[in-house]
Length: 120
Image (tube, rainbow, N blue to C red):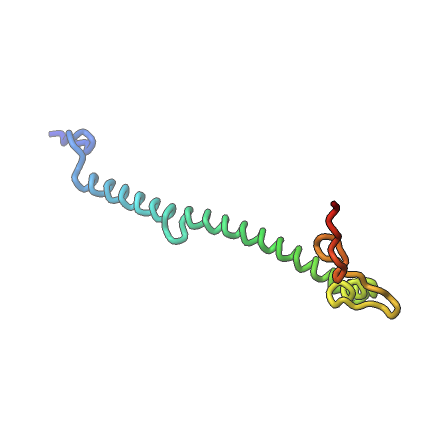
């Protein structure tokens, strides 16, 4: 007598364990994909951090420009006597001996001068 082997695939339906196995694998993959995209260190967080890094790099560049400008001003104040004299004249109102200073108000008249007479 000859023994016939049965092919597992020849049955009409899938085995319940196989369905559970593939379903569990599918759920695990969905869970993993969700946290790869939306997790604390996921794709969305990575993109947000890249945007913030770009913004901070731009601000660093701006501040470095301000630092360079201020360093040039400090250098000018330390080395250039004309810059020091100009600032002393503008901010402190200093003059050299023998100079006369004329102060004007916003209308272009010298302060202390009488206003112009109206024309008849």
